Length: 158
Image (tube, rainbow, N blue to C red; front, side, top):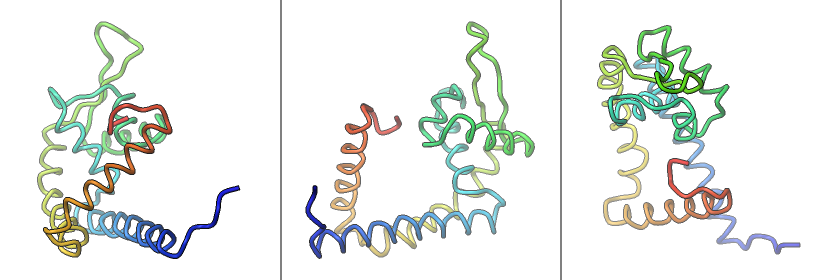
């Protein structure tokens, strides 16, 4: 049996949980209030906008978005209703489906981007300060690497 967390380990864990949970919830609230987009929807649009030809296989999009395929289907359906995303079958493999961001999706993303960037600066960059950003980044990357290793994943998008 593992030993209990010592006070400094527990304090670090609690700070991480509160910062991550509250930060994500606040960004989600601000995007919903200003753009009627959840943070999860915003991230899907970002992943598609950054992909070659603005499209990704749905399975890869689910992996990047850290959601199940069924949860991604629900989100993409909602984005499709708004005209932000389209789904297309792969011409060479009918089992494969691609998600593509539309011009309307790119426009919505461009508008919401300002709210997202301002929130990240307000809740992450500003409180941490530029001198400590490298430390925070390396710490978070080490956590992601440990989680990826535990789950047999090689890249940060998996």
